[in-house]
Image 1 (spheres, rainbow, N blue to C red):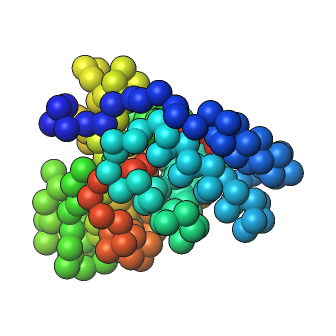
Image 2: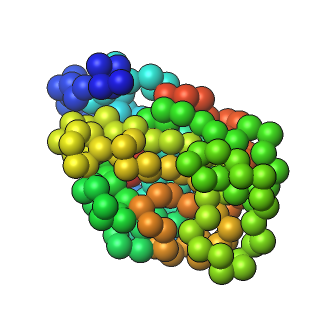
Length: 219
């Protein structure tokens, strides 16, 4: 598995990236919370994100398909072919961001979708150990941190950050998944994974291929 992971590469387009970064920073400065930013601002940030990732990780798959998770805004943005295709309310960890095993924190940095589970499973179907149990969760019933509907399993791509002993996102079982506790979305409330509305993860599951890049940042 480790041999197939993307490795950090030197940025090849420093001038273009600097210009895009300045544009993105100038636009973002007008809005502290990315969730409240204008569509034009979000598109500038999407453009920069794609350029940055293609330059830094040229060997990574699905170069034009990226999920950007903003922990500060509790939003996830889906960018495909340089266009902002979707915006989703999410929840990251209640313990904040962090990469260490057993921390119950959401890992930062670059990841990819390495496996997908749940095709054809009914909405709110409950998973344990990535297997459908045959049970259907009752929404907002206070039944704990259930994993429902669909799973996108994340693999860290930055050795020493979210890949390797004691901090490996895949070994930690970090997913993007549905939750029975949809009332908790929009604020940090998970145990490390990225939670979504069930309807949203079902749609997203069909749209993103294996190898889709996922970058998780504070904002």
